[in-house]
Image (tube, rainbow, N blue to C red; front, side, top):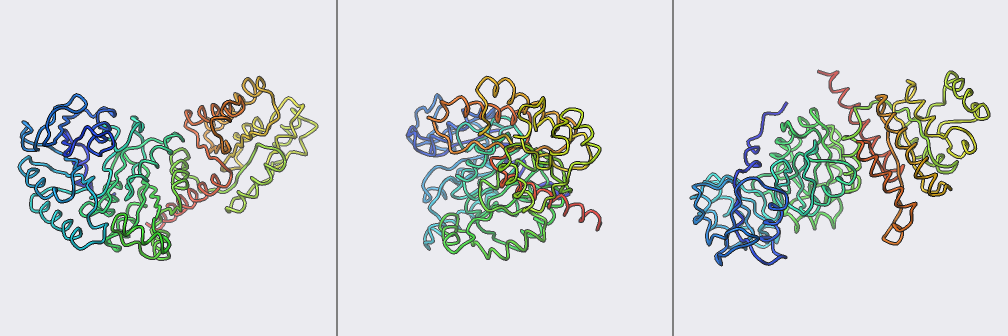
Length: 484
């Protein structure tokens, strides 16, 4: 296990000062004040602005050194870049440990003057013993401590940690993954990485006892050798998922202007991540899918899948998707068919894997019940339940029979200790569609499944891809253990 990182105390401040606090609701100084108040930061919160006065019920001090306490743990800088050097002098007098530079327009501009200023800021901070997060970043989301970098993010803690060069990407990841039931230990937006960089953050999350899964968005690294060494160690301890930004020529140019990062060859990245056992994804949607898979499914190394749900065409396409990702769909055993014959004698020799839901119309059973039965068998590794929105059922039967039956069956499969994956396609719906009972019923079923801690995906393609990468990782971990 990697040694415990020194970043831990920095991310758990007892006091925070927002320098550049403002009454302008569109300013960073106002927004960060709201983030901390609304998320229930329990430490001391100080606001600094030469105009003084009061903001959101809090006293505003004209200067950091005017704060009466002898020390401040953490400073969020929302002031122009040219004012940061004098701020650091005040930080030294207040024993500040960490300065988060929301401040931007430094090295990422590509201009010599701003690049030198960023270098001068880092040099002065080092002399004063102050760590720098950023510049050009949103900072820390740590729900346990009431730290946040956006509005209305979950206040409950979880097991997913992450580091993101993109502040907007970090917030989007947290917000949309939360809709799928994911909760977080802490997520760090680190921007230009002038001081605290991807290597130190990776080491931190690898050793962090609150984090079981590591997610990341990286545009470039400062030291490729150190990063690969850290990645190899981290992946042996817990899943590490990497979304690499700047894979193409245009993206590489944007990475330089966004966070002053050298993107590097995508072929080199792919080879390095594969060798280290990390999981590479290609979009924020895929990053969320992968986190959902690792969060709600146990270590799986088998590739035998049983699929149920949807009509003939739907189930066939689902089977194709899973097979194309390298999974096997075994046939039902003769022993199970004997059990099936007792319930549905007209279907016992007709039902196949994938299980076509339309076959059960007019019988006392439905496809999801068969899937639940099969969860007591040992011939499969993954149980896939598709909930299709094209089922021709009226509202009362859907809400009182089909939806509860689906929910109870997938919960029973999980209770049987089996790995169940739910695929619920909600389509491209808007306010008008949500007036329809069918769309509302599907959304409610999806919500209840998420609340029960089950993995839910919006399509068979995204489900199969995420589960394949999960299986690849745990297979790799097993092979690595055998080599020790």
